[in-house]
Length: 388
Image (cartoon, helix red, strand yellow):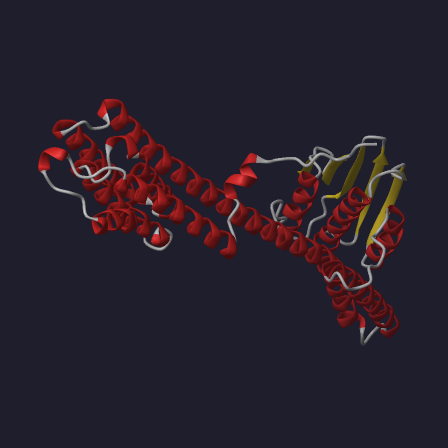
């Protein structure tokens, strides 16, 4: 039989519902009212005064001490100050005898707990100190003028007030930090998802548009003199466009939970990718060894890295020869893409595509590098580790 677990932090951040709050408020107010009513009616005013405590004074004392508890959630500072003042006056004048001072102390503790829970900053701290001080003044006056609760009773009252406010303050801070952490986690998850979608769209659209741009340029130049070459270029453009649309539908389908998912690209699909690059003038020499047991996410990352690398070669180095080596082991997948340094323009080593590849590798805790090598080749190297 499963034993339910208890999480202290969940209890600290738990919030009562409206009905539960109403029940708690009524129970606390009734308990404190009865306690204070009993304490106020237990003994008349000091005999030396020659005065008899009237019944209405007993009822007023109990009501002033317990009544503000009903409003402590809405006006915690006012409730604390009223109860602190009333408690100090009741104890100091002897309306509440020293042996029954628990009633005012409990009422003050409940009010100060609400003050710490609902009022922040210096205003809350100053209110707690003031309310506690007013209550303690009454106990000190009772000690001086008559048989008061004594130093121990005064210290106990101060300890109860301070502890109640501290518990409320701690609970408020814990709830605030929990809400802040939840907000930050949500914002971080949204940002990571946006980056993932942007990276996916860049890899899909960038490769196809680069191929389309190259072939469109070829078709423009040969349209009049070599119409058959223009026809071939248009066929490549049509194929690349359809492929890009299919991948976009798959990517959007992965975002929409109700859509049917298309299969993710595999290492075998690199052959088709190499064929598309070949249509754009890049001869791809593909070498794949192993990697059959690699997780799907690792395979997709490797596919996107090769796709983005070939896109860069098509845009900056075509026509050229490109070597793609993929080697899979039981622990990692190694990807190496290199081509001759026959660039037609400046190369942005830290461009968006390079950044996207680096982020994909970092997501799996691997290593990544991209840049010119000593053998006059531009080489992209990525290591994607995984558990076998």
